[in-house]
Length: 209
Image (cartoon, rainbow, N blue to C red):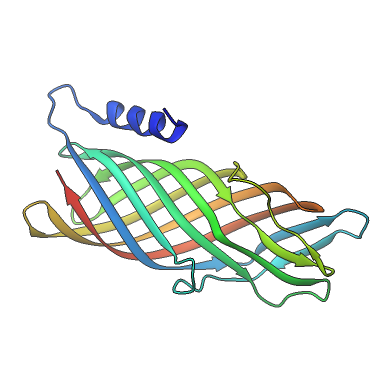
Protein backbone atom coordinates (compact mmCIF):
# COMPACT_ATOMS: atom_id res chain seq x y z
CA UNK A 1 0.00 0.00 0.00
CA UNK A 2 1.25 3.50 -0.80
CA UNK A 3 2.12 5.83 2.14
CA UNK A 4 -0.84 8.07 1.28
CA UNK A 5 -3.17 5.06 1.48
CA UNK A 6 -1.77 4.04 4.86
CA UNK A 7 -2.19 7.61 6.12
CA UNK A 8 -5.79 7.76 4.89
CA UNK A 9 -6.60 4.43 6.55
CA UNK A 10 -5.11 5.65 9.82
CA UNK A 11 -7.12 8.88 9.68
CA UNK A 12 -10.38 7.06 9.02
CA UNK A 13 -9.69 4.51 11.77
CA UNK A 14 -8.93 7.29 14.29
CA UNK A 15 -12.11 9.09 13.29
CA UNK A 16 -14.43 6.15 13.93
CA UNK A 17 -16.20 6.69 17.26
CA UNK A 18 -16.89 3.80 19.61
CA UNK A 19 -20.63 3.85 18.89
CA UNK A 20 -20.02 3.52 15.14
CA UNK A 21 -21.90 6.72 14.25
CA UNK A 22 -19.53 7.77 11.49
CA UNK A 23 -20.15 9.00 7.95
CA UNK A 24 -17.53 9.28 5.26
CA UNK A 25 -17.30 12.34 3.02
CA UNK A 26 -15.43 13.68 0.02
CA UNK A 27 -15.23 17.37 -0.93
CA UNK A 28 -13.75 19.10 -4.00
CA UNK A 29 -13.00 22.84 -4.11
CA UNK A 30 -12.02 25.55 -6.53
CA UNK A 31 -11.04 29.10 -5.72
CA UNK A 32 -7.90 31.14 -5.26
CA UNK A 33 -5.25 32.10 -2.74
CA UNK A 34 -3.58 35.32 -1.68
CA UNK A 35 0.09 34.79 -0.83
CA UNK A 36 1.82 37.24 1.48
CA UNK A 37 5.41 38.38 0.88
CA UNK A 38 7.80 35.86 2.45
CA UNK A 39 11.57 35.15 2.32
CA UNK A 40 13.02 33.33 -0.72
CA UNK A 41 16.63 32.15 -1.01
CA UNK A 42 18.07 30.90 -4.30
CA UNK A 43 21.47 29.23 -4.13
CA UNK A 44 23.08 28.52 -7.51
CA UNK A 45 26.29 26.52 -7.73
CA UNK A 46 29.25 28.80 -8.42
CA UNK A 47 27.25 32.03 -8.16
CA UNK A 48 26.25 34.55 -5.53
CA UNK A 49 23.22 33.62 -3.41
CA UNK A 50 20.02 35.55 -4.18
CA UNK A 51 17.89 36.57 -1.21
CA UNK A 52 14.63 38.46 -1.61
CA UNK A 53 11.12 38.90 -0.31
CA UNK A 54 8.97 36.77 -2.60
CA UNK A 55 5.87 38.45 -4.03
CA UNK A 56 3.67 35.76 -5.58
CA UNK A 57 0.55 35.50 -7.74
CA UNK A 58 -1.69 32.42 -7.78
CA UNK A 59 -3.32 32.64 -11.27
CA UNK A 60 -5.85 29.94 -10.33
CA UNK A 61 -7.27 29.49 -13.84
CA UNK A 62 -3.89 29.11 -15.58
CA UNK A 63 -2.99 25.48 -16.18
CA UNK A 64 -2.33 23.55 -14.07
CA UNK A 65 -5.43 24.75 -12.21
CA UNK A 66 -5.62 25.61 -8.52
CA UNK A 67 -7.79 23.13 -6.56
CA UNK A 68 -8.25 21.31 -3.26
CA UNK A 69 -9.71 17.95 -2.29
CA UNK A 70 -10.55 16.47 1.09
CA UNK A 71 -11.74 13.11 2.38
CA UNK A 72 -12.74 12.39 5.94
CA UNK A 73 -14.81 10.58 8.51
CA UNK A 74 -17.39 12.56 10.49
CA UNK A 75 -19.09 11.97 13.76
CA UNK A 76 -21.96 14.29 14.75
CA UNK A 77 -19.65 16.89 16.33
CA UNK A 78 -16.22 16.39 14.80
CA UNK A 79 -14.20 14.89 11.96
CA UNK A 80 -10.75 13.68 10.99
CA UNK A 81 -9.70 14.50 7.43
CA UNK A 82 -6.97 14.04 4.86
CA UNK A 83 -6.64 17.15 2.67
CA UNK A 84 -4.57 18.15 -0.36
CA UNK A 85 -4.30 21.73 -1.64
CA UNK A 86 -2.76 22.18 -5.08
CA UNK A 87 -1.45 25.67 -4.29
CA UNK A 88 0.48 27.67 -6.93
CA UNK A 89 3.08 30.43 -6.72
CA UNK A 90 4.32 32.66 -9.57
CA UNK A 91 7.13 34.99 -8.49
CA UNK A 92 6.48 38.60 -9.51
CA UNK A 93 9.02 41.47 -9.74
CA UNK A 94 11.78 39.11 -10.84
CA UNK A 95 15.32 40.26 -10.02
CA UNK A 96 17.73 40.64 -12.94
CA UNK A 97 19.35 37.24 -12.32
CA UNK A 98 16.03 35.34 -12.32
CA UNK A 99 14.16 34.87 -15.61
CA UNK A 100 11.49 32.53 -14.22
CA UNK A 101 10.52 31.14 -10.82
CA UNK A 102 7.29 29.20 -10.33
CA UNK A 103 5.94 26.56 -7.98
CA UNK A 104 2.95 25.76 -10.19
CA UNK A 105 2.89 21.99 -10.49
CA UNK A 106 2.36 22.42 -6.88
CA UNK A 107 3.28 23.99 -3.63
CA UNK A 108 1.16 20.99 -2.68
CA UNK A 109 0.01 21.05 0.96
CA UNK A 110 -0.92 17.60 2.32
CA UNK A 111 -2.35 17.68 5.85
CA UNK A 112 -4.27 15.69 8.41
CA UNK A 113 -7.03 17.92 9.83
CA UNK A 114 -9.22 17.87 12.88
CA UNK A 115 -12.57 19.64 12.39
CA UNK A 116 -15.15 20.67 14.95
CA UNK A 117 -18.78 21.64 14.34
CA UNK A 118 -19.55 24.88 16.19
CA UNK A 119 -22.67 26.14 14.33
CA UNK A 120 -22.96 27.96 12.11
CA UNK A 121 -19.34 27.24 11.11
CA UNK A 122 -17.05 24.24 10.96
CA UNK A 123 -13.63 25.07 12.41
CA UNK A 124 -10.54 23.05 11.53
CA UNK A 125 -6.80 22.87 12.10
CA UNK A 126 -4.26 20.69 10.38
CA UNK A 127 -0.60 19.77 10.08
CA UNK A 128 1.38 17.98 7.41
CA UNK A 129 3.95 18.49 4.69
CA UNK A 130 4.60 20.47 1.51
CA UNK A 131 5.25 18.48 -1.69
CA UNK A 132 6.75 21.07 -4.06
CA UNK A 133 7.63 21.16 -7.74
CA UNK A 134 9.82 24.14 -8.62
CA UNK A 135 10.28 25.40 -12.20
CA UNK A 136 12.79 28.17 -12.83
CA UNK A 137 15.46 29.77 -14.96
CA UNK A 138 18.26 31.55 -13.10
CA UNK A 139 21.09 33.36 -14.92
CA UNK A 140 19.97 31.59 -18.10
CA UNK A 141 20.26 28.11 -16.55
CA UNK A 142 17.54 25.58 -15.74
CA UNK A 143 16.66 25.75 -12.04
CA UNK A 144 13.96 23.11 -11.51
CA UNK A 145 13.27 20.10 -9.32
CA UNK A 146 13.96 16.76 -10.97
CA UNK A 147 12.13 13.46 -10.62
CA UNK A 148 8.99 12.96 -8.59
CA UNK A 149 7.55 14.92 -5.70
CA UNK A 150 9.56 14.98 -2.49
CA UNK A 151 8.82 16.33 0.98
CA UNK A 152 9.92 19.96 1.02
CA UNK A 153 9.10 20.85 4.61
CA UNK A 154 6.31 21.20 7.18
CA UNK A 155 2.91 22.83 6.77
CA UNK A 156 0.15 24.00 9.11
CA UNK A 157 -3.33 25.42 8.62
CA UNK A 158 -6.40 26.81 10.33
CA UNK A 159 -9.75 27.42 8.67
CA UNK A 160 -13.47 27.92 8.89
CA UNK A 161 -16.28 27.00 6.52
CA UNK A 162 -19.97 26.36 6.13
CA UNK A 163 -21.93 23.69 4.28
CA UNK A 164 -25.46 23.92 2.87
CA UNK A 165 -27.33 20.67 2.03
CA UNK A 166 -28.74 20.41 -1.51
CA UNK A 167 -30.17 16.89 -1.78
CA UNK A 168 -29.55 13.68 0.14
CA UNK A 169 -25.83 13.45 0.78
CA UNK A 170 -24.88 16.33 -1.54
CA UNK A 171 -23.87 19.76 -0.26
CA UNK A 172 -22.29 23.02 -1.38
CA UNK A 173 -19.64 24.68 0.78
CA UNK A 174 -17.75 27.94 1.21
CA UNK A 175 -14.51 27.99 3.14
CA UNK A 176 -11.41 29.99 4.00
CA UNK A 177 -8.09 28.64 5.22
CA UNK A 178 -4.82 30.21 6.31
CA UNK A 179 -1.79 28.05 5.50
CA UNK A 180 1.87 28.30 6.45
CA UNK A 181 4.48 26.15 4.73
CA UNK A 182 8.23 25.88 4.23
CA UNK A 183 10.39 24.21 1.58
CA UNK A 184 14.13 23.51 1.34
CA UNK A 185 14.73 21.46 -1.80
CA UNK A 186 17.50 20.62 -4.22
CA UNK A 187 17.05 21.74 -7.83
CA UNK A 188 19.15 21.45 -10.97
CA UNK A 189 22.23 23.50 -10.21
CA UNK A 190 21.43 24.54 -6.67
CA UNK A 191 19.04 24.81 -3.76
CA UNK A 192 15.79 26.67 -3.01
CA UNK A 193 14.58 27.70 0.43
CA UNK A 194 11.23 29.44 0.72
CA UNK A 195 8.29 29.96 2.99
CA UNK A 196 4.69 30.74 2.11
CA UNK A 197 1.83 32.23 4.06
CA UNK A 198 -1.45 32.26 2.13
CA UNK A 199 -5.14 32.95 2.60
CA UNK A 200 -7.25 30.49 0.58
CA UNK A 201 -10.84 31.22 -0.50
CA UNK A 202 -12.93 28.29 -1.76
CA UNK A 203 -16.30 27.16 -2.97
CA UNK A 204 -17.00 23.51 -3.60
CA UNK A 205 -19.19 20.44 -3.59
CA UNK A 206 -19.25 17.58 -1.13
CA UNK A 207 -20.90 14.21 -0.79
CA UNK A 208 -21.47 12.39 2.51
CA UNK A 209 -22.03 8.65 2.37
